[in-house]
Image 1 (cartoon, rainbow, N blue to C red):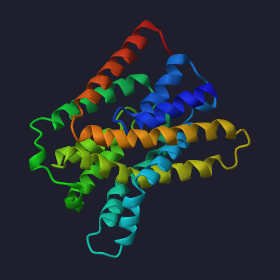
Image 2: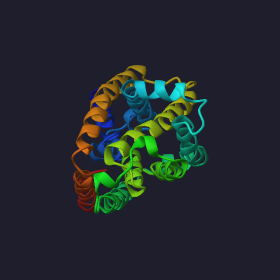
Image 3: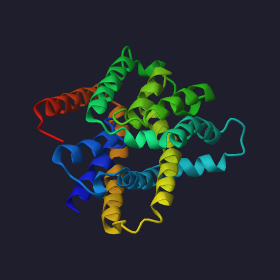
Length: 261
């Protein structure tokens, strides 16, 4: 139960803060040698369901507006649907392979790689020359959608790589984050439903552990969404990039010294 609470807090924070939730959900059990249900993909997906609830509550007005405009030509809703396809296809085709990619060394590499992308995307950033979410087109959305598919690899960070992709295409920082959250909603929902179906016939499911993790990740996730958007209205991604570099360094030192795993 204690482990579920800790991982629920971590998931709520790191699903939206661009430091990779999957990396943290793998690394914490690895570092502290936690075993059992909390160190499985199924539990990780359950925590993602908690953050899905946070997304739906926080973005409820956005989604109501999008659903009302579904019949309009060029509706943002249809742009989101199409931009979701790359991640949905990649997830369906590579599910088994993704489940095996839990190497801390791989995570250290992807943490550093995306950190470099973050820093590069912030070069010469000028808010006045950037476009808002309302002006996003299908080409830009698809570019961000392809980037989102790359986040299936642990350590990349779905929010991190999609915000970077948005900045690369010329979006305002806070708007890129908001589009990242809208784009992630159907992907997280789909992954949660698929994994729930896989779990349906298992007798060993520890429901209380799953429920506490989902509840905590939902509550913490709501706060993380709110304050990340406020943060990005004034500050860059560099703070998160430096944290990712530091985490990668800790991973490498832990492997080298045998302090974890």
